[in-house]
Amino acid sequence: CKWKQMFQEMQLFHSRFGHYEINPSVGMGSKELEQWVQKLLLQMRLLVEGKPSYLNDERVKMLEDIGFHWCRKVVVDPENDISQYKEKN
Image (tube, rainbow, N blue to C red):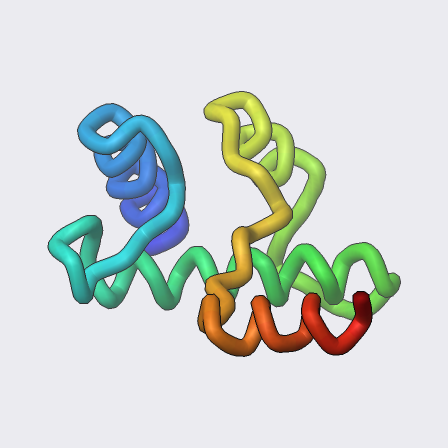
């Protein structure tokens, strides 16, 4: 099953890097794994909204049991971030 294969790849990624922030552009994980994680986040959003999702309680528990976090960091351009802070203060 593709899902189990990607889950195992994610576990290997975590054992190597110690986190789940996949970034193939700097050699941390594959593009396929990055896309799979993005799909997981979308599927979780659908599940929370009560819409059809391929995630189920078993898969959610499997992911949470290995320490996967559903919230992702948002990378912001530091220049924009500073200017927005200055505008507000």
